[in-house]
Image (cartoon, rainbow, N blue to C red; front, top):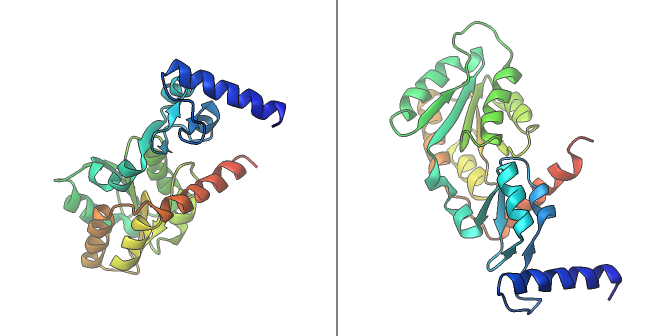
Length: 230
């Protein structure tokens, strides 16, 4: 055992004694400040079953607004939606207004614009939607432009966002169940209003599958953490 491993083992034992936990090393994973600092501010950290969270990790989580959840909670995340950020460029303006009316009786809607069919640039509005999801003001986001592709690219540049462009109900289910997508982009020039409502309703109702999908989503977020700022 290296000196570094011995020090870490001693620290883990000390934390367990402080928390009156048994000292069987393989049983209780430790969540320390490094794990919390690796999560985007305002993000969510999935905690393994029976994990021990160090006092410093808890303190940093409060400062950085990081929420600890179990994998079981992640799997029912779709049931916790109260607020949706929605935005569009000029090509998606009419569909945005339609979807806002469709959803506002069930959710609090944060309208990021645009507010008319006058020509605008979709990155400006996709960024606003993605930021509201990233900072936790909205649990989900919906952005509409002509094809849905450009807005998806923009949203995925924002830390903590997993945007998916969906064009039918099957892709809506897959993006949620497999990828835990938290921003949906739609192409108003590609689909009609009825299909848009079906996609949105399906996407909002589909829970994240967890399990093997959680491991893969963790790897997506690890890529983001490694390349952020490079």
